[in-house]
Length: 559
Image (tube, rainbow, N blue to C red):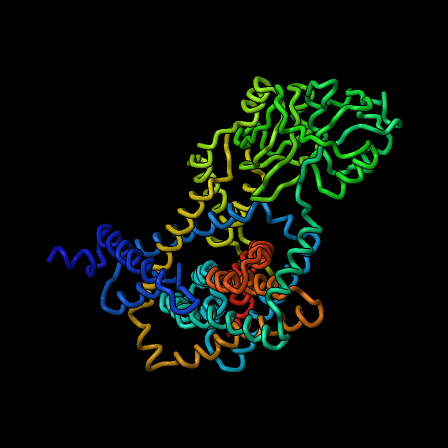
C-alpha cells in the first residue's frame, strides 16, 4: 500500500522526508510538555523517534546518515555563531574561574566514564554514548559516532552509542536538578541573599549610565578649553560631555569649547564619576539641559552597516566630522560608556546627540536599519558550513593512536562559526545572524539529528532496557552525571565561596543543559544563572565534542 510505504518501506526520499517530519512534529510537541520543573525540549524527537522506530518506522540508511549529519552541522554551526562574539571575553576576570570549574566537570566526567569502562566492563561505544547522554550533550554523541566510524567500528556498534545516549539522557537532566537542591540544603543557602549579593557585585562592575547637568562655577576652569581642563580626563574617566549651553544657546560639545562661568554642560556617565566632575566644575544645575527646547535632539541608532562593524568609535570621527556626540552604547541590554576604544558590533544601539540634519548623516553611516535584524545573508552561512567541514576534516595524528583525531562534523563547524562570528564581517559578508535565524537553524538541525538517532536506535531500545543491561547503563550514567558536578559544586561553594545562583548557572552550562538552566532561573529571577551559563557554555561545548574522540582514540586499540 502506497501510504504504508511512506513510513515503513525505508526505500526512497519521500519515505525519509515523511518519517523525519512526523517524528519532529510529535517530538517537538512532546518536548514542550512539562513534567514538574523539567521539559525534554529538543530531546523530544529522540524519544519519539525511538518509539516509532520500535514500531517499524525506518529510513534508507544512506538518507538517514545524510539527514543526521546535515542536521548536526546546522545545529552546531548555529551554536557557534551564537557564542562566538563573547567566546574569548568569557576567559577574563571571573570568567576564567568559572570556566576552570566547567573544565573540571568535563574532565571528571570523562575520567569517571573511563573508570567505569575498566571496572564494569562496558564497551567503549556504550561508554561514550552514556557520557554524551549523562551530560545531555548532543554534539558529543555525534562526535563519538563519527570517531567510531573512522575507527571502522561495525554499524551496530555505532548505533548502540545512540542507545546509551537515550538511556542516560533523563538522569542527565534530573541529576543536575538534584545537585542544585543538595547544595542549597547543605550550605543552607538564602536565595534572596545570594541574588542581592550578585546584584551588588554587578553594579560595581557595570555601573548604570546617568545624566547630570552641571553649571560652571569654578574660576579654575573659566576660560579654559574642554580638552585642557586640569585632571578632567583622570577625574571623569568614563564620562561623556555631550552638550554645552553658553548664553542660552546649546550646541554639541567639542574639545575646542571654552568654559565660562555660568555655562551649563550635560554629562553622561556613572553617578560616582559624575559627582567627581561636578565638584571639579561647579554645582549641579537647576535645569535638565536635555529637556530644554533646542536645535539639539537625542536619537537611538542601530549599528547595522557592514563597513562599521569591528571599528573603534574613535575611527569613525563622528564628533569631528558631523558635530554629533555618542553619549551611550547599549549592547545586549547593557548600557556601556562609549569610550573611543570600544569596537562596534552588529546590533549595538548608540544614543547620539546633535542637530537633526547631522544625525541623519550619522544614521547613514551606522545603518540604523532595524529590518537588518530580520534579514539573513544566506551565502555566508554556506561558506561558514563549508569552512567548518573543511576544518573538521583535517586529521591530527598522535603517536600510538590507531586513527587520527579530528574535529569532525560536530567540532569543525562550531569552531569555524566561533571564529567567523568573532570576526563579524569580511567585506560585504556578515557572519553574524539575527537571533531568530540562529534559533531556527538550531531547532531545525537538532530536530533532524535527534529524529534520525531515535529511528536508528528504536528497533533495539526496548530489548536493551528490559532484557539487557539497561538498568546497569542507567546506574553508570547516574555516576557520570552526579560525581563531577557534585565534587565541583562542593569545592566551588566551600573553598571559592562562589555565589549559589552563579554556581547553578555553571552546573547547567557545564552540562550544556537548557532545561537545567530553566530550572535554575525558576529559583530566582536573577541574571546570575544566565550570565554564568553563557560564560562557560562555549568552552564546555568544544570540550564535550573532543572528549569522546580522545576516549575512543586512546583506548580503542586496547579495548
